[in-house]
Amino acid sequence: MLEIKACIFDLDGVVVDTAKYHYLAWKRLASELGFEFHEKDNERLKGISRLDSLNILLEIGGVTLNEKEKEFLAVRKNQWYLEYIAKMTPDEILPGVRAFIDELKVNRVKIGLGSASKNAVLILNQLGIIHLFETIVDGTKVSNAKPDPEIFLLAARDLNVAPSQSIVFEDAEAGVEAAIRGGFKCVGIGNPAVLFKANIVVPNFIGMTMSKFLSLIN
Image (cartoon, rainbow, N blue to C red; front, side, top):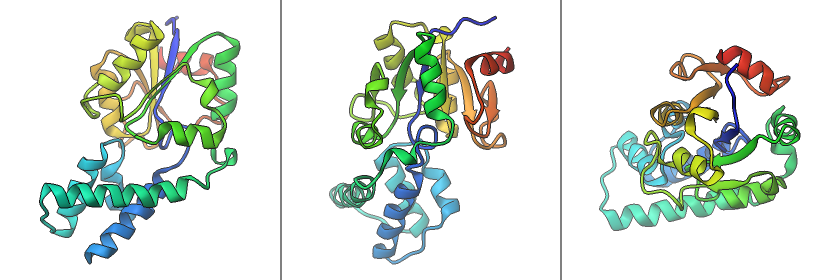
């Protein structure tokens, strides 16, 4: 059976559902710019950087801005997002995640976070689980956004584990591609039609254990 020494988690949509707060902030920004932004549009923004997300939003609205204006709007959107996540509580950890992480701890599997979010530390503190992660590689520590594998490769390096002995948990197409490019095993969390490049796809962590994941991967 495959030997796994580390698990690396994306944050948004895997550990906690912050996508709804991103959506509210982007929708608010689109409204100020004079156009509608829908939930299906928000799917295109999952797993990518803030600036890339803004560019897609502007494309949807047919809005052209210079770089200085874009920087201003990106900061504005993030301020709204921070207001929303500052009110988060541990109850917002997605079902099954804490039990699975606790099992990893018991079995001495190393745990890391690889998230494009620049607010990962704040969110993990709000959830009361920051101490569970041995490394946190977020958007402040990488030069290349997913689907580039840099974020996961840095996490594996910090954990001193080879990618081939690590599982990445992702809910976004760009994140799955990043994991596969980096030589990791990848579990998609969510829709199989979107995450089909992952080694396996499950709807959530409810009732899942490491042995179940390994049996499915193998």
